[in-house]
Amino acid sequence: MSTRPSRNALAPGPSADSLYCRTCGRLISPRKSRATQSTPQRYCSDRCRRERPRPAPSTENDIERAFVRLLDDGRERRIVNCEEVESAVFTKSSMDGGVDSEGEELLSADELGEDRQSDVENESEDDDGGVRLSLDMEPPAATITTMRPKLENRPQKTLREWGMQKAKEREMVRRAARRGVAFGFEMEEGKRRSVEAVQWGRVVESSFAKGEWGVRWRE
Image (cartoon, rainbow, N blue to C red; front, top):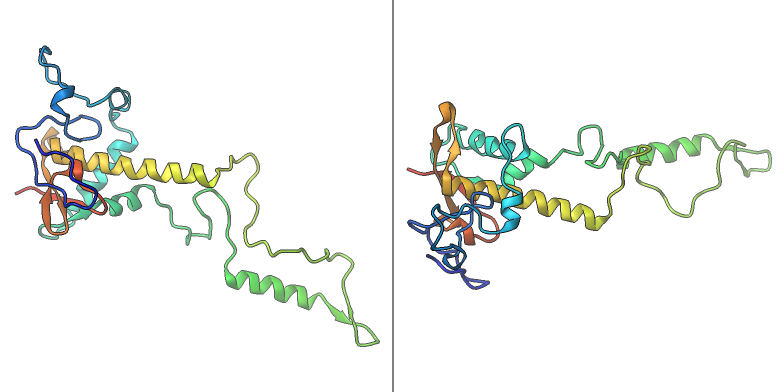
């Protein structure tokens, strides 16, 4: 079995006849396998046993379906990067209506310009050449707010919570990719088709792939 490479080393090639976790798709260390077990070990840790993939409908199934859909787009030897699937499944474009994933409606530069222009139009000159403000205008704020208020009763996430959520989504996609390498993706009629992990143009062991990598159909 391949050992974990050093921090800056390239990921090793695929391992043959190795045992893989059914949840995270990583190699199961021989020292974690019990020789007295009558059946092969399915999970590498208690955490993976608790978080095993759920059947459809589920996010795990949506991720695997996204991999299959992108791999079958008609291009020969198509490599689908994990980032592509992460974007397809989790990312909601903030360009549609100017609303971000947390429900906050962002103001564009044009909208800010229009708001400022409307303030100017509400002003009128008095007889002495000064500027007279309308009675319904509020005093200028110390800072310009570029974000409209959130909807009421909507939970607000801190920056740390948002980062943890993104990291969880990233790992869910990579888990699905590693499971595809180890066990294949489910196709029609219950058949499974295997993929191989590719990084920088070479086939690697997905358990140790770091940074950007993807999968393609195995020939």
